[in-house]
Amino acid sequence: MMIGDRGTGVGSRIKGHLHYGGKWKHDIHGKYTPVCIANENNTSQTCAYCYNKLSHPSQKKLKENTSESEAKELSNVLILASVNPILNLRFSPLPSLMKEKDRAVMKSPLELVNIYNVTDTKEDMSPTYYLSVNNSVDQLELKNPGRMRRLWHSHSNYLMGLASRIVALIIIIGVLIALGIGLRYTDGLPKSEDFSHLSFDWKINPGSYLTPYNTSFQYNVLLDGHSHSTYSDGKMNIRQLLDWHLANGYNAVMVTDHNSVSGGLAAEKLALKEYNNSIVVIPGMEYSCCRIHMNFLDINETIPTIDPSPSDEELQRVINKVHELGGLVIVNHIPWSNATEFGYQLPRLPNHPSVDQLISWGVDGFEVVNQDVFDLNTFQITTQRNLIQMVGSDIHHPSVGAQVWLTVNATNMTKQSIMQEIRNRRTSFLFDPAGTHPRTYVESPSSFNLLTPLLLLGDYFSMFYYNRKGMYSFQGTFCHPEVLGVNGSIIGWFIFWVILFLVVFELTRLFALWVLSKFKWYQRYNHESNVYK
Image (cartoon, rainbow, N blue to C red):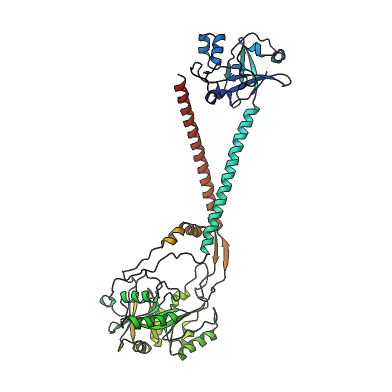
């Protein structure tokens, strides 16, 4: 006998109780499981519909053909109906519904029966159903194409939903990568720090706790021989730069912006006009290229750069030009220049001239202390050769402290007097590697904070690749060969975390849907129980 299950699963729908009172409601009780018997040609079929709660008009008809005690003992109930139970619901004994040709298909005589018991063995994933007719049991072959279609439909719906969520996730990640990395290369964005409200409300006297390198040296000038303002890559404007120096115990400063004397001249003018001789400014510039950084001191015009990597002859011509202008040439931070550039096996400034070469070219001296680095080797050479020994804070940012002061004993507090003592090599210095303790810290403006999440994402996504160019030449180019590459490990782990996130999300989603379905079933069950008691 062939049976087709056209419902939502016999085993899941036929369990329940027989006797509930109340009015039939199709939206609540209209769910059923039909078990249909088809004829030979599959041109007609008779279906038995399994309701799990018989609180509809069939209850009366059922009681007319079944004793009360028999009905109570039934655990699974089949109500015989026509093929369209919703539009043409009829309840009657089986023979009145079955046609003669349908009986022939069943291959056994059917006597008057009103109720069939269906037993679900549930021994495996493909249950076998049995039909009892007049106490004789025939095993039925279950054909459930409808259920398979529903399972495939359910699985295909989930897979389609999963695919759409994956596509959406890929699109979102792509947009975030484009925004984050794009912002990194966008000009005109808000700055990460606001330097407009700097204050330096302290006053350091380094002479109260430091002794000059030459302990017997007397001085009245504490000078910074290397500083930067907003005229190049410094963060403080010239007024803030002067205030920072005064707060940290200086009364003289050489303003030496990269490849320009404009900052030094502007600072000198401001000091003479508004600072009442509390601080002396000596203009200068830091000649910056891929081979060397040199301070040109006490000059009034910018020495133009010729090439990011000038030849020896070009460097000699530049040195001679400074001397023609009456300035001094000081070679800066040799340890910094010769340190290995990150990502390369080359010095930060490749092909830096040696100390002996520079002396032969006529430089006047060397920076022996830069920030907290004491260049002992250069100090010893300059001492032996009687060259100028300069020191400098190399200040760019206000959050750092002062670590070194050049000591000068000038006859009066003027640029000329101070420079004369320097030219005569009558200097020493105070040195504190730890630096002064008072600092000024700046905050990020709200306009920058607005973009911070995207910028941080950009910082992370930019780790997927690298584009190394080496040290900046301060002439619009870079000093090292460009190196492009992909960080495959970072990309791989990013994909791993994305997949892990997706798996956790899907499991959480499925669990939440399962909990929600159970909650809705519980609510519906309680509602039906309350209505039909």
